[in-house]
Amino acid sequence: MTKEKKEKEITEQVSKTENFLIISPRLTEKASVLSSGNIYTFNVVQNATKTTLAKEIEKKYKVKPIKITVSNNPRVRVFTRGKIGYKTGFKKASVFLKKGDKLNLA
Image (cartoon, rainbow, N blue to C red; front, top):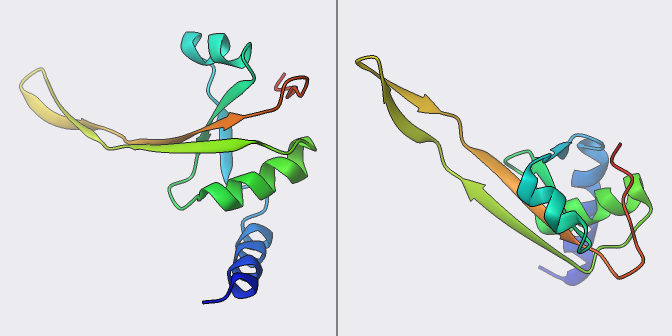
């Protein structure tokens, strides 16, 4: 597959799922410490890729990310009150920005 076809597919994916890839920013203690170092963390949908996330962040926040890392956390089996259940899994993305760039998440 050529580079042009890949880029075309990515733009089509972003236009179809526009404003739906990023669910919410992760508001945890660790995420707030990282944000002071220009690393922002988001909860994203399961089918999100690094390239589609980069395009959406450029569109939504008008900032070009340097790097994006994505981690997929699987569901976890838990045992509570004699019953077996599951905590849902999630996917999160860390977005690295240049010095001087900031995201207004509030």
